[in-house]
Amino acid sequence: MSRAASTGEFWLKLLAQAEKRLPALTRLRVRENLPIRLDRRRIYVLPTAFGLVFAGMLFVMSIGALNYYNNPALMLTALLGSVSVLSMLVAFRTLDGSCLDRVQAEPCHAGDPLTLELVFAAGRRIRPGLRIDIGGSHAVVTALPGEPLRAVLTLPTERRGLLALPRIRVWTRWPYGLFRAWSWLNPQIELLVYPRAEPHAVPLPQGGQAVQRSRVQALGEEFGALRAYRANDPRRLIAWKASARADRLLVREPEQPVGDDYVLDFDALGALDLEARISRLTRWVLMAEERRARYTLLLPGLHLGPDIGSAHARRCLRELALL
Image 1 (cartoon, rainbow, N blue to C red):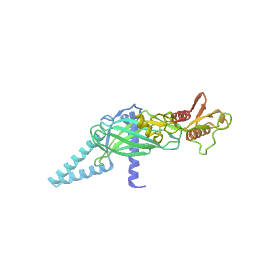
Image 2 (image 1 turned 45 degrees about the vertical axis):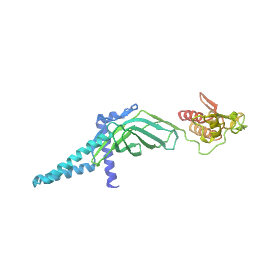
Image 3 (image 1 turned 135 degrees about the horizontal axis):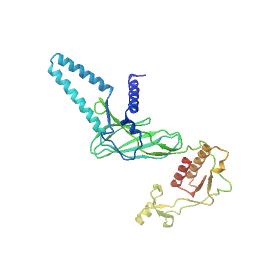
Image 4 (image 1 turned 60 degrees about the vertical axis):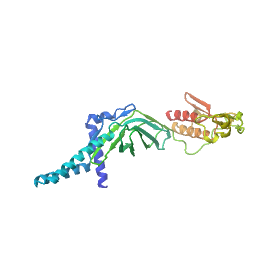
C-alpha cells in the first residue's frame, strides 16, 4: 500500500472518530429538506497532512531566524505564515454561501448505475476546486459567479424500490492544499429504482386474452391523419409541410393497434417466486412498449390499463418496483 493511500485511510478514520465524538458533526446525519445552505455553523476546517508539515517547517524557520537574529528570514517566515492563514479563510469562503437547490435523477433498473445530478446555487462568488463525494462516486467542479453549479455522479443500485440518497460530502483543499474545508449534506430524498428485467425474453402471454394484431396505417400528410404536437412526440413524426401550412406543429398519427390487448397478470405466474414474477412482468412491460402494443398490468389490488406509451410504462414499472 502506498504512503498516500495509507494517509488517506488514516484521515478517513480520523473523520469517522470525530463524527462519533462531536455533536456538531453527528447532528448532520439528520435528514434535511431542500434547499440546504452552507454557512459558518456547518463548515469545518482542519489542516491537511501537507499543512501540518508546512507548519512544522515554519516553526523551524522561525526558531532559526530568532536564534541568528536574521530579520529577512523572520520576515519570510511571517509572510508564509500569513499566506497560509489566508488560504484557510479562502477555503472556508469557497464553501460558505453555496446552496444545494435540486437533486435530479432518472429511474434506472436494479443493477444499473443511477445517474444523479446535483444543482447548487453558487451565488456571486467564484468557487473553484469544489469536490463532491457521494458513496463511491466523486466529482470536481468549478462555479463561476451567478451561474449554477452542476455535478453529475453515479450511484450503484442493487435492489428495486426506493433508494435513500446517501450523505453528500462537499469539500475543498483549494488554493494551496494546506487546509481542508468540508461539510455534510443529508437531503431527505428517495430515488426510484425499477426492478431488474428477466435476462431471457419470454414471449408475451398468448391465448384467450391476447393477441391478434392489426394496425391502422397513417394516411400520409393529410389533415385527417394529423394531430397537434405533444411534448413527448418524436421529431421524426413531425409533418413539416403541413405544420407550415397550418402555422402550428402537427405530427403524423402513429400506427394504432386494434383488437385485443396483452394482459400481464401477476397471479398467472404462480409457479414463480415474488422477485421472479416481478422480473418477468418488467420484461413484458418493456417488450410491449417496444412493440407499441396496448397492455394491461394486473397486480394484487391494482389494475393498470389497458394503455400504451411511456407514461403508462413508468406507472407500471413504479408499481412493480414498490410491490
